[in-house]
Image (cartoon, rainbow, N blue to C red):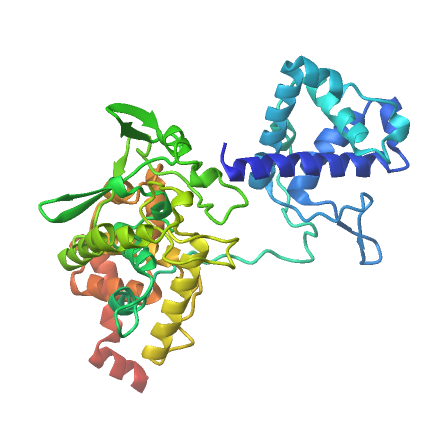
Length: 457
């Protein structure tokens, strides 16, 4: 499972332990047990606490929390994620004999001091009922998700266009941002930046590329992306998984390399199990330049770097490699896979150079709202396709979205773009008579002569 899934599962167990301990520490705990309402207090109470929080407003206007947890409400959507994880865990506990025997609750006298006892009580109750914990959420009436409804109002979120890298700065950023006057610089970062803008990839996806994933046909680069674990690669005429292939080099897939400088996430690309192609923006100069950079890197730069790599370090198939040793990155050696930390640093320096070069240091800083992050480059790709009139299913395929709805964020317009649309609509008014009559009746009041007569009256 993904790191995010594991994080949510661990968080769900932690919230259950914390909540169970809090309930067990309340004066009414033993009364609830004797009254047969403990299950509701432990399980339904957890669901309510996740959705709405645990804090209330007391009669004197002060915040009170009988549980002493002081949780803010997560809302139903995030609560469902955690409760789904707990439901899966309880099903495993129920079906695994060793786990089921561990769950048998010990004496309730120790619940306030031993977390495992409080957890066991909740788990035993959940397993006995054998229902999904989501049933507790479905039965809730709609209430404000904020922990203190009526005191702090949730701000209305204006759905605006996604933050996009400023179009006028894309070319100088790509061409000069990663190299100095002598032409030296971070070639791996420059290639990744080109792939983000030209192919619309997520920032982490380029770190999983192998050298063999790049092909040149009629002097044009074709790039294929594969799932870092399950993607296939040919070895001696036999297709094996990339996990097995990396094992021969002493590596594991980078999305699984937790706690390592080589860690690179993988959200998923539609078709990545078989290998999915990258689709270039229809700008031939950008594609030719990306092809040139990749060809030079594969034929000149990467071999030169790997020649300086210690023989004891061995080889690996990853396309992008570190050009020098990084003592600050846990001893990353020459020729090791290029790291996301190194790319972050190079991107930040390139943005700062852009700000100095164009005397715009306020706008040109790495900032999500300004669109100058790496994901802002991916947004630029999607917005550019939208500006060309490319249909949604094609944008979906180009950006490797699993859902068709994902592309719609790129259809949102900025304020200036909305004004342009309105002005263009006035130049080409609708031919439908009903709306034409409404429009003409209204506009007749604002021609020069009518306006002059109204001024006189």
